Length: 95
Image 1 (tube, rainbow, N blue to C red):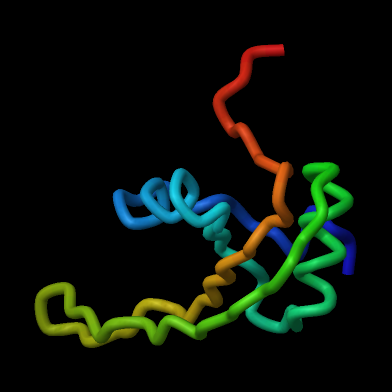
Image 2 (cartoon, rainbow, N blue to C red):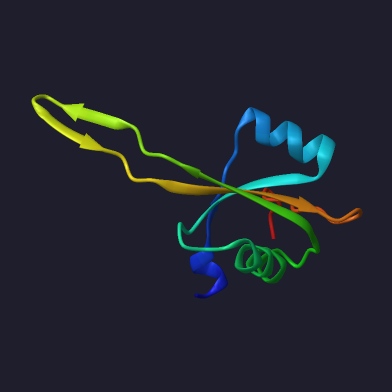
Protein backbone atom coordinates (compact mmCIF):
# COMPACT_ATOMS: atom_id res chain seq x y z
CA UNK A 1 0.00 0.00 0.00
CA UNK A 2 1.10 3.56 -0.69
CA UNK A 3 1.46 6.09 2.11
CA UNK A 4 -1.49 8.08 0.77
CA UNK A 5 -3.70 4.99 1.03
CA UNK A 6 -2.63 4.21 4.60
CA UNK A 7 -3.24 7.63 6.17
CA UNK A 8 -6.83 8.55 5.27
CA UNK A 9 -7.15 11.85 7.14
CA UNK A 10 -6.16 13.62 10.36
CA UNK A 11 -8.81 13.82 13.06
CA UNK A 12 -9.42 17.25 14.60
CA UNK A 13 -11.15 17.00 17.97
CA UNK A 14 -10.80 18.83 21.26
CA UNK A 15 -8.96 15.92 22.83
CA UNK A 16 -6.73 15.56 19.77
CA UNK A 17 -5.82 19.24 19.85
CA UNK A 18 -4.97 19.02 23.56
CA UNK A 19 -2.81 15.93 22.97
CA UNK A 20 -1.01 17.65 20.10
CA UNK A 21 -0.24 20.73 22.19
CA UNK A 22 0.83 19.00 25.41
CA UNK A 23 2.14 15.53 24.50
CA UNK A 24 3.23 15.72 20.80
CA UNK A 25 0.53 13.18 19.79
CA UNK A 26 -1.38 13.41 16.52
CA UNK A 27 -4.52 11.38 15.72
CA UNK A 28 -5.21 9.98 12.23
CA UNK A 29 -7.87 7.86 10.59
CA UNK A 30 -5.96 5.08 8.84
CA UNK A 31 -6.74 2.13 6.59
CA UNK A 32 -8.38 -0.75 8.43
CA UNK A 33 -5.80 -3.28 7.18
CA UNK A 34 -2.72 -1.14 8.02
CA UNK A 35 -0.40 -2.24 10.82
CA UNK A 36 1.72 -0.09 13.13
CA UNK A 37 4.90 -0.38 11.06
CA UNK A 38 3.09 0.72 7.90
CA UNK A 39 1.46 3.64 9.74
CA UNK A 40 4.84 4.75 11.12
CA UNK A 41 6.44 4.67 7.68
CA UNK A 42 3.53 6.48 6.03
CA UNK A 43 3.49 9.32 8.57
CA UNK A 44 7.28 9.72 8.37
CA UNK A 45 7.26 9.94 4.57
CA UNK A 46 4.15 12.12 4.19
CA UNK A 47 4.96 14.70 6.87
CA UNK A 48 8.78 14.45 7.04
CA UNK A 49 8.86 13.83 10.82
CA UNK A 50 10.25 11.13 13.10
CA UNK A 51 7.74 8.92 14.95
CA UNK A 52 8.35 7.66 18.48
CA UNK A 53 5.34 5.34 18.93
CA UNK A 54 2.08 4.31 17.29
CA UNK A 55 -1.06 3.15 19.07
CA UNK A 56 -4.03 1.84 17.14
CA UNK A 57 -7.66 1.20 17.88
CA UNK A 58 -10.49 -0.20 15.77
CA UNK A 59 -13.64 1.90 16.18
CA UNK A 60 -16.68 -0.30 15.67
CA UNK A 61 -19.45 1.12 13.50
CA UNK A 62 -22.70 2.03 15.20
CA UNK A 63 -25.98 0.43 14.22
CA UNK A 64 -28.18 2.94 12.42
CA UNK A 65 -31.68 2.93 11.06
CA UNK A 66 -33.41 4.84 8.32
CA UNK A 67 -37.15 4.37 8.63
CA UNK A 68 -37.80 0.65 8.73
CA UNK A 69 -34.40 -0.28 7.28
CA UNK A 70 -31.63 -1.33 9.66
CA UNK A 71 -27.98 -0.87 8.83
CA UNK A 72 -24.55 -0.38 10.34
CA UNK A 73 -21.86 2.22 9.79
CA UNK A 74 -18.51 0.79 8.71
CA UNK A 75 -15.69 0.01 11.14
CA UNK A 76 -12.62 2.26 10.93
CA UNK A 77 -9.18 2.41 12.51
CA UNK A 78 -7.76 5.26 14.55
CA UNK A 79 -4.02 5.73 15.12
CA UNK A 80 -2.45 7.90 17.83
CA UNK A 81 1.06 8.78 16.66
CA UNK A 82 3.61 10.12 19.14
CA UNK A 83 6.23 12.34 17.51
CA UNK A 84 9.85 12.62 18.63
CA UNK A 85 11.06 15.63 20.57
CA UNK A 86 11.49 18.64 18.30
CA UNK A 87 9.18 17.36 15.54
CA UNK A 88 5.74 18.79 14.82
CA UNK A 89 3.05 18.58 12.15
CA UNK A 90 1.31 21.83 11.28
CA UNK A 91 -1.83 21.16 9.25
CA UNK A 92 -2.89 24.79 8.77
CA UNK A 93 0.09 26.42 7.06
CA UNK A 94 -0.48 28.30 3.86
CA UNK A 95 2.17 27.56 1.22
